[in-house]
Image (cartoon, rainbow over all chains, first blue to last red; front, side, top):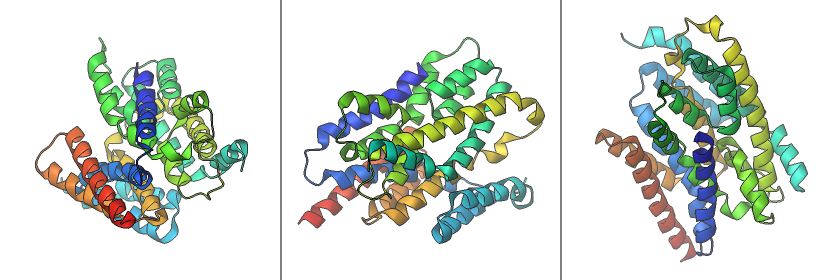
Length: 91
Length: 229
């Protein structure tokens, strides 16, 4: 059941796109959508994040901006999360 | 570039996210073992569902008797961003038969789509995303297996500390979008602002997603209309 639901979300989006593709100038609009979804998840996550989580996010953004290296960015972010939490987060 | 070579390129360039997916897979295996799910069930779930966020959401409700409706709804909501990934690839999977596109969409994955936008024009996008998906699936299955079998070693580990790992990985993809995009990032900025406003208004998660994506889409449409005159 779960596999069917998830697969359906993948296929349905593509077929909706096929129905819209004849509209002039629609391509950049469709291509902007995944980024909008990421922002919809990221912004509230940061807003309710603890100090260590916000610091970890800042590290990830900065490292990605400078190096584009996903492994280093994620590694540093996770390190801040795991080892920074006990020192930075109250309670 | 042929589909086959594009798929190989997808596999070759997926190293970064192979590692981060592996981390999530191990965590999923540990969480699945802790929730009492049988090993083969967890592996079957990873092989057939292939979505970290959806599978973690399902585990939250994994009690006997299984609340199938609740699980279905939560998985659908968490996976709804796949709709947007599919829509984003509409113009990029041309040149393939419909059955092939339908079958290969099973391996549609976020990092594959994000990275495919950064590839040269001659790369076959369906091949690339599928190759990327094969790599992610390999990572996901191996790491789930490892997590399930090593769960006893982590019995006392507090996985709550790494709950935020999902947004961190998503931030890496967002940065790739920001840096690789040929168009202005205004829709994404507006989406973020609208998401924050809706969050402050105590809106439900699905409303935040819906509202901010709609706002971003409207801004993108206005932007395109301006560009086209």
